[in-house]
Each structure stands twice: as C-alpha cells, then as structure tokens.
Length: 491
Image (cartoon, rainbow, N blue to C red; front, side, top):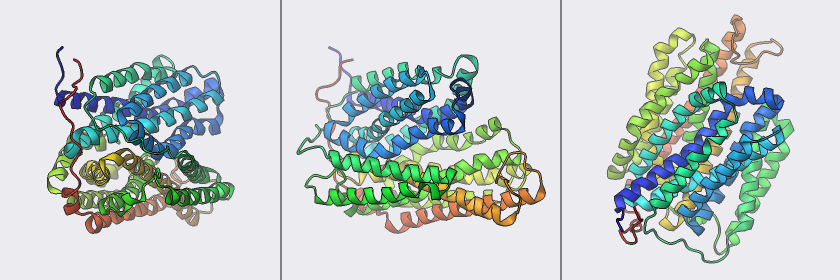
C-alpha cells in the first residue's frame, strides 16, 4: 500500500492542529457578534449575554493545566482528537439550545473541550517537529490568526443571513476534518507514560482554584470586588491546597522540577507579564477607538493589521529564534510592544489615529510578531519531552491569567482616574458619543493611565527576557525525541 512520508504526515498534523485550534479561538470571539440577536430570541438580558461569553473563558482558564497533564498521560494526539469530538458535540448542544441556561452550559462544555484541544495542539507540534518546533509554532500562530481575522465578519454574515445557531453548527464539518487530518497524519511518536495514577485530586483543585480566581476577577470588575471577595479568598485557599498536595505526591500533575529549569521559569514569568500587556491594550484599544468616533465595524477592521503582520512574520522570527537563541527576540519584542503602547497614548482625537495611532500600532504589531512564537517555543522546549503537554498547559494558563488580571486592573485604573477628574454622576469612562469636554478629558486621562500600566507590564517582560532567558540553555536542552519513518500512515 502506498504510504505517506514523515514530512507529509508532519504537515497533516500541523493542519489538524491549526484547524482544531482555530475552532476554539474563533468561538471565543465570534459569539460576541451574535449576542444581541441571541438575547432577543432567548431573552438573556445583559447578565445572560455576559455569561454566554464568560462561561467559555472560565472553562478554558480552569482546565488548561488539566488538559496538558491528561495529554502527557494518554497521548497528545489521542486527547486532541477527543477534544475535537467533544467540541463538536458541545457545539450541537449550543446550536439547538432552547433556552439561556442550556446555551450557557453548552458554552462551558465547549470551553472544557477547547482546553484539551488547544493545549495538546502545541504539545503535539513539539513532539512531532522536535528541534524545529519554533518554526512550526510560528506557522500555527500565523495560520490560526488567519482564522481569527475571518471569524467575526463571517459570524456576522451567518447571523444576518441565516441564523445565529449556525455559528455553532458550522463547527461540525470543521471538527470532523481536524480529526481526519490528525488520524491520517499519525507519526511513530513516543508512547505516553502511564506510571502511577492520574492526579485527579490535583486536577480538581487546579480547576477549582483557577475557576474561582477567574470568576472573582472578571465578575469583580463588573459588580465590584466587595461582591466577589469570597471567590478570590477561596481561590487563594484552594490553590494553596493544590500546591501543598502536589509537593507531597510522588508523581504530581505539576512537576515542580520544571521550574528549576531557568528558561521554563523565565518564559512563563515573561508570558504572564507580556500577555497581560497585550490583552490590556487590545481590549481598551478597541473600546477607545469607538470612543473616538469609529464605528464598531471600523474598530474591528483596525485590529486586522496586527494579525496581518503576525501572519507575515511570526514563523520567520520563530525560525530565527530556533537558530540563534530566543533571548534577543524575547527582549526586543516586548520592548516594541511597550513602545507602541506609549506612542498610542498620543492619540486624543480620531484624526490623531492616522499619525501617532498608526505608528504606535505598527510598533506594537512588529513586537507581537517578534515575540509570540519564540516565547511559546521556549516555554515548551525547555521542558522534557515527556512533560510537553503539562508545559503547554502551564504556559496557556499563565497567559490567560495574565490577561484576566490585567483587564480587571487596567479597567479599575481607568475608572479611578476618570472618577477623580469629574463629578458627574453616572458617567461612564470611554463611552461612545461622549462629547462634554470635562467627561472627554477625563476619559482620555483614564485611557492614558491604563496604557501606561500596560506599557510598564510589557517593559517588565522585556527585562525578564534580557536578564533571565538563556540562549545557552536553549541550545543545550535535551535532544528531541526521535520521530521516525517507521509505521507510516496509509495514504
């Protein structure tokens, strides 16, 4: 029988991970376009709309670490395929949901499947591409960005011309294609280790702790932290219990030996800081554009250049980091992000966007392209191959926690500065159509304060890259597990 070569099967695996991960990424954003229509049909109310979005993000944040550990134990390709199947089933439930409660539960289940799917996508690339994983992750980043760009406009067209239910049901053929590509692209990979028992208590504590922390931060921003302090206190207690449990186990879900590796600890510390800066910028940048007078559609279009720059350059910088070491890229990238954020602070009016705004966005976009593939590849490659899944889970969890904390804190800073500069009751910072000079000046001041914090986080990440990341350790890491031509997949 005709067989497929190793390089072909690698490319099929890459295609499978891109398609599967794109499903999870698009569903995190495309539902926003449909929320007003869903609200009218299912009578969600504002709180219901929030939970349709938040239930998905909460499940992702809570289960990234668990998804990586399960992949390490039972096989990353197997868990990836199961994640695709679970995502498809949850999408059916969402598409057929008769009421708000069913839809929210379905979205949470999509997040559960998405956590297993995305975490094992990266770990699978690490195992299949080995020493060339930086370039592969760059390609994965670029290609998933294409899907992310196309998602919101495509979702808007589906909602307008057919039904909002099809934004979920269209996932079925895409998930089926991802499963088929993953199965046909199977390589002669290192078998998973199944020593001891799966750390179920640790998995439950990690999921509960991160879930409570995410809930407390996100809901605290909306309702006030006086209403969610209990969730934050419980998160601290649960995560402390998780750490205590993991230290006592012979085979913990989170091996603390990983953090003794300089590049693993440094890459994840930098991930927390830089992704906090990224999301802190993007969320309030989009809101600020509409405050300046751009329409929601125009504001969405102005987010596209960053993704286009990343598509064009991310794989190239990932390959350069593979050859020359990651330290320069993990220093320069965050520094450019911080510089771009500071330049964007000069934008006071809509006309300013076409000068200072464009310059700031270009710096920001270039920094993102320089940094995004090397930082993920460094976090994964600094861990032993047998821990690739848990390393991916740690990195994904750290990035999402950084973003959630930053959005909450930067929003709080913007609100405090705004309130300090105006006495108007009930005024909302960065509100669309805000024309009164006092309120407008207060909003601009609040935005500048928030962006100053985002820039500081980016520069702190650059400092971690310059001081803590080691090119020598990156080059001298343990050799990748061999992926052979044996047992090739049938054509």
